[in-house]
Length: 440
Image (cartoon, rainbow, N blue to C red; front, side, top):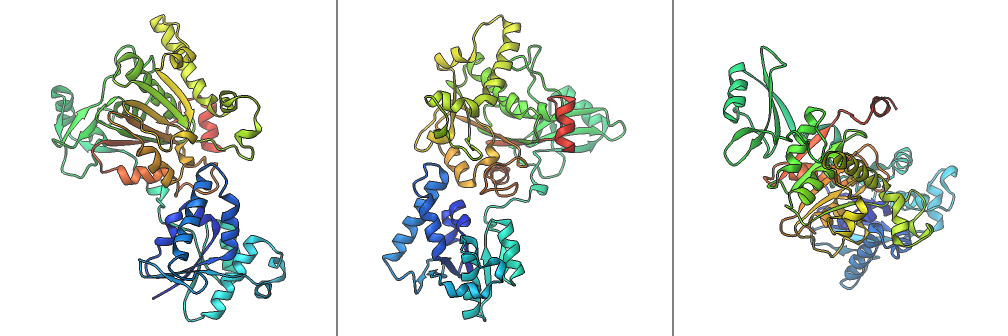
């Protein structure tokens, strides 16, 4: 049955391609949405780029037909821009008749429902409160779920298998065992657990090309840049980070699980020690929470320091520990001057090609699926990309724990031979940090 979908501004700013994702249904864009999109078009961030893309799409469609009467889309549906009139407000209760953008959208949706009562009207918005208001008015309201992932069902990247004691012993003795008859994803980490004695275990990883479970990478007496895994999940993470055949690694976990620290340690090991990659590039999205970079004093380096400080802290911690072991004296500024380490925001990545580098994107949960695609497609020959983040700590107003780019890429890449993932749950920062992450 054909339906009428009325779209909110935040849907188009989140995904400009949303126009083409409603199959053979009717898409209605209130004129208020066009006005709001126009206000974002000069922004130099991803939202601004999406706003400009929406305008380009609509302008192209305008050339083949009238947006006011409707244009037939290639998907079989139609698209039209619905005008707003003050009299539409009469359909709303007195509390919602204030001249605000949200109220105008609701008024237009109610008008569409009134004029075309035989066709179901669905109001699509990523604004939770607006969905509640729409529902109270008798409108069916939905979130835009094109790229949503059920966070409760997110792929963990590892599993526990109860096996015989003999198989665990054979795993340790010969260095591999045939995978039991069950489906594993490539590079999925595995705990082989003795059924009779659960403390008798073997940690390994599924190797897809020969169907074997093989032991994890050994960190050695010196660890990885003087860092040792403190739990099973960190051992799994280090194995994926140090495996050069795994080109995309995703680490998801709450604060204090060691995601960023382990990734940077592995990156320094692979660049400064083993020379596998030419450079370690560490980056993170900048979400100013009310203040943009332009309000901060100083040059670009001074402006970025507050946002990059967590990365600087991790690098300094690793270097201080490694210097004690190796008697080296290099600080992160010296490594940057030598071209071994580069720390920068994601703002300038579009259009670049990044070959033979170990690239870490921290706080990736603040990115949209489209932004994640932009980053991963920058990878040149020989580059490894590591995405880390906590889906429950999101500052980007246009994504949530289910629609962010980090969880999206975990699900999309879990069956690919060049990717690996670990969901980390055990905090190791401190007892206080672990309690805070669990209780607050």
